[in-house]
Image (cartoon, rainbow, N blue to C red):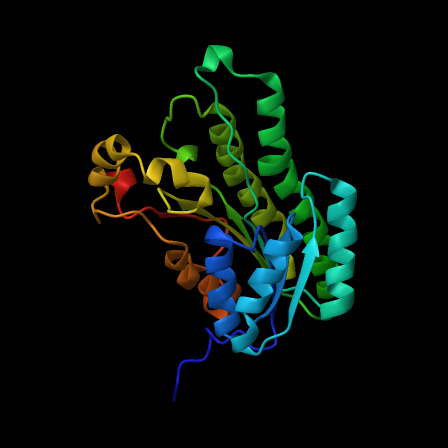
Length: 260
């Protein structure tokens, strides 16, 4: 008999920033596993392009233009997603932005605030609205769900001129643990994924930098940049019944960089 827990048929997965990069790598894998998909992104054209790429999977796909830094937009977006899809089982808070400075002493306050508004406030708003739906569903006799925060290796390792991003990604880990403890009674799991150096639009500049590749990527034990597709398996696992007893954890996916 085939092992069935990884089958996501009948489940709905919502991914913020799901129209590209790591987010789309996760979306694509979950769709192939049978999940219906909700993509939140701030770029309508990128949303449409992502939806087009998923047609071959045959699953239902809803795209919404949602700025996760806007709590009212997040609340309205979640209500619309539940209304149109019937339910939401998994929410991946992946949307994020970078933002640095020449040095920490010259770090602009406006850059710091902008990074926090998306990377931290956005996750808080998204998970708060997701929990409202999942708790209400559980109280009606239909428990279960999964929240996944996309943190970063920067939550653990020091990175010069990257203090704002590091602060947001580090804060997601205790947020996830607190959600996990409070909501376990509703069958809800909450976990974090910490990517290392991944080839996405956000790291495009570094990918073409020979000095960076020589000094950093050569230190990755697997000797390559990570790819968005490298996150598909973990997304399916956390969205599936295979992870039914796995909560409050942080999983590092970095090709071994963090332990080298």
